[in-house]
Length: 144
Image (cartoon, rainbow, N blue to C red; front, side, top):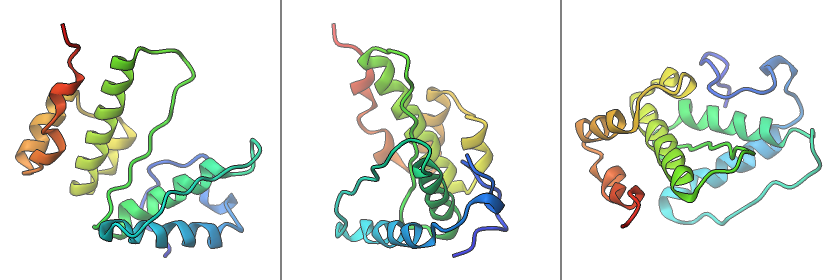
């Protein structure tokens, strides 16, 4: 599955420097392909720092984004700075919504440039007929 003709969305390591990871990337792509049938199992990638775990996940994301239409890839970076649970939930939901819409539209710039505020993304989801993506957004509002 060569995605060389599409621009990378996430890329820590340039493609020409990224080598010897075809087996693990292939395994992760096969696992992702099982997701629509609920036949996948959880997995984790564990290793010391600087071994290429993030680069592998970025390559898998890029290939899933461009080369299939069944599984929406979601990539979220957990920031080191402390945030409240509400701030985290809003950041995660915004990222999830942005990436889901970008995937449906095949608009990689939307992800790379982090285009769209939460209200804009909610409206875009409605326009795409993706009501299920926004059905419980009310959970983001603090109670009180």
